Image (cartoon, rainbow, N blue to C red):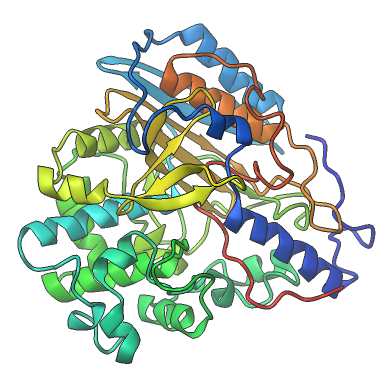
Length: 455
């Protein structure tokens, strides 16, 4: 994959820390504020959350194979995917699980799926809503007064946590001191560090919010708090509750919260580039995921995730009223001309793809591992893809994104798989604004630094 240096000083670009921090801050801001390409917005012909009514052709295995291979050819180390249309299924893999050894990717690997965890946590909370133990519109102070005290605890509701309108900031940057100055050092030093969820909440509450309460602002802290609320109302560990009542109820055999820093099944290496500041990219497949917890620590497979979302959208995990609440959305991504191209519900979002259809699902992004799962509204047609090189994008010294062939190839595969079409890599994405195609699908983003160093 072609790599363009973000700075000219030093192998890791760290000789000028102020410049490094400014460039990284701008890149992370892009990740936080990314919007879909203008052509994708122009193709949106249905209200948010409504799938464009049309016949979806049967799975074209040759086209899926070629499109996934194109994603690897564009520069992704390796990827694997599962596509489903009713009872018909296709699974495939491309590229390398370990570039240094040449070990190939396999379609049945386990993978860290990041913020797809949020859908599982939201289902668990909604199960408690159905039992009358949690009220979505109750203040969080009713359940965790010691964690969110005072006026904030009385004004933030459980619903606001689950749809990211709480005004509570993300905890990730403060949880990794020095991440913007020397990403590799910060990530390496914290590989085996365990962090309690209460500490993550404290870090999020102490950080100035990116948006005021009532406005959408993606924050992992929201779902860490949701997990702690689960613990208070059930008397059980949140991860144990989700395992018994969501994962097992869905019949998933390879989905779990890791008990250690290692995955327990076959998996690929997971390589983090951090926009070229970690060069060459390092494998972070072994990592203590307590920094993500009920917001992003799950391990799963592409097939398991398709099963999960199919059962969720089919009403097998929560009842009709809870599912309607989960699919009640707020604007999440808006183009510069005011077109809403993504809406966020409760741990679930709907977005328009370049071919024009609206689909439901979520994405996940952790160190070295990316995952994206989308489905039609009835859950019949689905795609889940996992890949093992993250923050591959490059920015110039002014923070402008440089041309990137990988993201269009990923969009082409996912769009073709879920819509039944087979767009060429980059179709519908060539006229994207400079910061609009940073990392699909543009919700599971690294947080924006509050204080940005000036060069």
